[in-house]
Length: 146
Image 1 (spheres, rainbow, N blue to C red):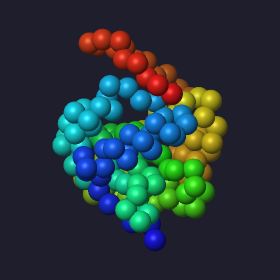
Image 2: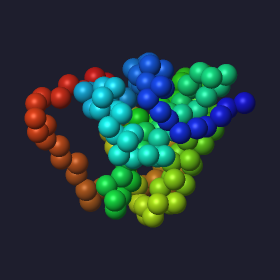
Image 3: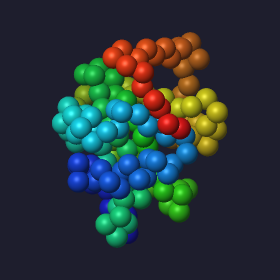
């Protein structure tokens, strides 16, 4: 049986292992223990883990700016994909957003990640061809490992 619960910092070793071993997850200094702890404190109750026998097999990191939600690092271990775990995590985070009045949520997906795009679109998400994502590293160059 898979159990979904709110993420906490005790999960970090398993989370970083899951994210590091999941294709199309970009990791940077933002994923350090200190930065993740800050993120979870600023966004309580919006990030979840899926557990099978106390082992994390999936996770979703959710946050918001007061108007719009954002999902980061939705990942499911290869052995548990296509079994509904990702959808369960997605349902938990979107319900948590609805409960605090967030009406729209965004996700960044690598353009060449077709399986990721398929997952999101199958679950009711839509592309925004009228928008272009722009980024700038403010304090220093941020390495993103993909």
